[in-house]
Image (tube, rainbow, N blue to C red; front, side, top):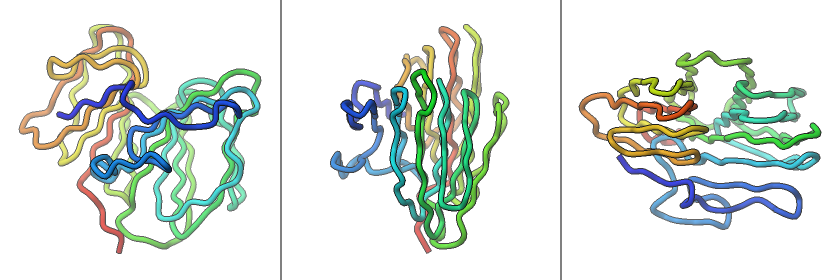
Length: 223
């Protein structure tokens, strides 16, 4: 288990434009050849947007983009004609496939926080697709089939327990609260990268907590 603390994340964004970003992996000008990916996961970005701030239209290709809203409202518009407002507990999955452009903004009056995760698909090309799951239930598996990955959101009351899935690659991101994972304390923004575990690990909540848990088959190679 490789634990990466919130304080170790790369600082990004544009503070003058009301955007603060914390990157878990190499991203843009922040390049670390030893921290490019974990399994299919190539980005896990914590995004904080002030009211009125946002990302102007920009392109994506060959990427599975999964977004989890933590606080506030996220407005999404894309070149395929989708326009959606996402709120806490909503999950968005944009499969960029052969190419798509989109806009992400905080058009509300309060702050916005979301976690955005990028995964590499097994095959390149294809038609983009888009899906929103409102109020994703606790522990409900959300498959990202093109990347051979499954996401679960775990919400735990104090002293609550969750058994992590068994998979070649397991990634745990703490959205909120404090948890104990195999005798290791994890705080908000911390993440654990788990491989080669013979028996499933258990997470124990020390406070009310929310976790994003990925199980992945491996590192896809674009075909």
